Amino acid sequence: MTSRQEELQQHVWERLWSQPVSYEWDSVSQTVYEQLIALGGTLRGLNIAEAGSGTGKISLRLAREGAEVTLIDYSQQALANSKAAFDKESLSANYLFADIREIPLPDHSVDLTWNAGVLEHFSHEEQVRIVQEMIRITKPGGLLVILTPSAASLPYRLGKFAAEQSGKWMYGQETPVGTMEQVFRDAGLTLQEESRIGFLDSLAFLDFIAGTGPLKQIARQWYLTLTETEQRELPGYLLCSVGRTAPIQSEDLTSTSKEEQGTVVPGGLKQAMARIVQAQQLIREHHTPLEDTSSDELTRFQQVEASTWLPLVSILNRLLNERATAGSPARVLDIGPAYGTLLLFSALSGAECYALDNTTQYWSDALATRYGLQWIQRDIEAAGIPGSATYDIVLLTSVLEHLRYNPLPVLRNIHARLATPGSLLLTTPWKRYVDPLSPAKDFTDLPEYSHQTIADAAPLSPSSQESVSIKLYSIDEIYALAEAAGFSIQSLQPFNGYLQVWLIKL
Image 1 (cartoon, rainbow, N blue to C red):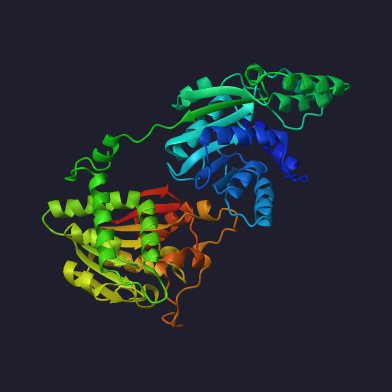
Image 2 (image 1 turned 120 degrees about the vertical axis):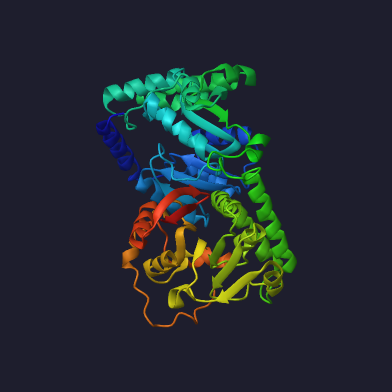
């Protein structure tokens, strides 16, 4: 599709979604819904992405039945319509304003990715790109379901032709699909099954042809006299193409990744994750819940850690092992460590470990004594890093978004206290994933820290940090911050809704 065609097609959808949208259930939606249920079984609790969501009507029903849904569309009006419908029922969803050829979701983060009535508007090359993106965001062993108008559906083809001839066709450029087999193959996915469904739905297109009312009625009556086997043999309106991503093989967890080749890490990521599990278990053994909390809070927080830190843990493990191999343990500073999982992980790897936090309520003195952890209560914005020592690695996980003032002074302070070379490992929620429709707010708009006190501010509970975030960052802003603070970015990748950033001081 040329840029001019894209512009015209997007105008078609913006015009369509700017009209009043009905969220009344309809026959086509029922057909698609039944197919998703037949393929995926119960969808309760699954993370489901609709890539090209339009009204979001079917996703609304999936959310109503317990699925966690993400709606992706390049029409802001379509997303606004969907959000209004979800809000009306007090249901939550993730809304991503994006082109589905470049989906702003982490790799392997969705159980089922699907769309209906989308790919027929794109060229073969673009269809391949879209399917590749759908594969990328789908978990190993997860489902891809793509529904397109079937080239074999005679009522649909006749009605479409008549509408185009009379100037009544409102869906822009749309090419009926015979099979998605070549698209799947070119995208690197095996077409698992393909079927043509929704014969009765195809009859609605005959409305574009004057005088076909009686024909529609006869066709419907005749269809209902057929057996289920005979009905399935009729080409319906929608072609349903299904694929499943490759499951994880055991060797994927035990082999050394390309990033880790050349290090002395036996088992690579598997070894690192085993040490994370060990650290979390030790923390649970030494944890005493606060009066107004329970041990469940720690469990929930550790589950978030495990699903958030995968790329970061791999990098940290590599850096720690490189220092150990060189014969000098790394000096690690964790700013805002909460329960101290990454700090203890570093200690178990032989590092000298220090931590700064504005509250002591998550610390364990017994754990600190046993593993040589040195904790200091400190507000990083108000007082900076104490002393004059330098550190090889500084950790700043889920802290940047909670800084109340311009973050540059904090990052420059970290830069000054890093050894050369040194690494800052940072995670923060990705604005494009968490809140893509909110207005952009440049970090330079945040006020500089002054001598007003913030020490009396209520400490942040790990379980409530997301709800009090005051600044979400885009990838561009992270690059701008890094440059302004004197860092180079070694790697940056979105993962499970978080930006995982490795910054280095050279």
